[in-house]
Length: 265
View (cartoon, rainbow, N blue to C red):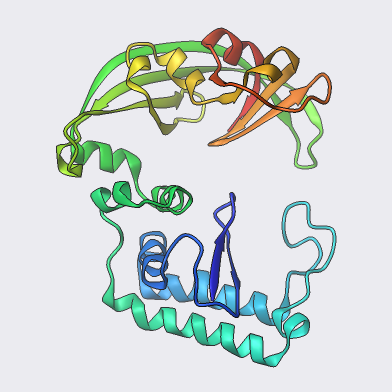
């Protein structure tokens, strides 16, 4: 059984191999236990959902931008493959009571970066930072005008927001690290929502450059970026022409980032 992760925190499976992409079965269940914090949620929100997908497939319109049917595993691969996959899901339920979610320290020690990012998505970052011990270093804010869209993706106008950014030094001792870690907290006063992103220590005293530094692109495309849209760690650019990204990777400056940012969530 092969486990494959996507950028949208979705998990897919392939059969016919004992190898797994990103993690072992036990590690997968440890991650899932952090997401679905009791057995009932684990069954109802993951195991049963996945079994249903492999039995019935994805119907048209059931996923964003999906305008066609995806056949079930039973239809596309046959009874043997379907039974093998269901057996694997059943094996995950047997592991659940014998494992614990990843600790903060263990999540930092994971070597596979894709799987580590997935595990981080299940961790309460503010709680982790509070438990590790953190000192606020600098606060800065900026007024931004963001585009608004309706449920069909049609532009409906712009709205002004005041975004606040704070940089923090986080103690690394409890993670087995000798050095400190640094993060920037993004706070929107309109939605009262906060988000945390790890940053390099060179940006610890400049919150606006700190958040801009998390947007890394090939240097050759910067003159051709018309607009930036951001959803969490997903970064999108509108370009004035097709250009192949190549060469040096650089962080945007705060002037470039906030000058081009038109939407975020």
